[in-house]
Image (cartoon, rainbow, N blue to C red; front, side, top):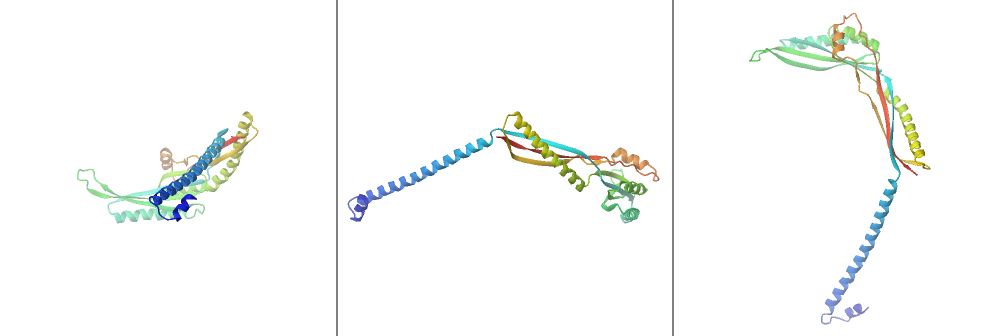
Length: 264
């Protein structure tokens, strides 16, 4: 009140400077007071948060459950290739195309087999002299077969081996078959997870538990390569009158559930 009246009475020697300094001090005090209140609130909030996080980590157990099953392979992917050589690259291309056309005509009557040509490649051939003189060309083209009819595939491969070589035969589970198996396993894995959680609860003499988080992973074993190097050699040595013997085999499908529970 005195500062205000002094200001309105007009300037006095040194009066305005004193008043200005005192007003700045009051402003700073007000600022620091507000800051102190805000800091105290922040400290209280941080302490409450830390206490809440500590409570969340109390009596927490990590556990997992996995179930798996062997599923019959119901899809075959086979790759056969035609290879040839010639001094003239144009003549060589005609040879390869002619054999590929022949293979397509062999496969068309097999309605249950889908196929496509792929990977046409050409390489130069050199002699063994120091000058490395070009003496011709080598070319190859592969054909990919895909089917769930293994009997038809065996017959088709038998005929194709007259002019083509087997590169690989891969047996696997169709995606829709794998998904159905995974859905069944997921239910079993989740039930197993809850059973283990109850087991922990009982052993720790707790009145109950809550699930904090759960993660689910699905997987399957590696694809079954039916035709390895030894088997391919045996198949190529067979007479074209003999059908290739193909065993479907199985692929292991699994579901893993892992997560955390907190006892009450």
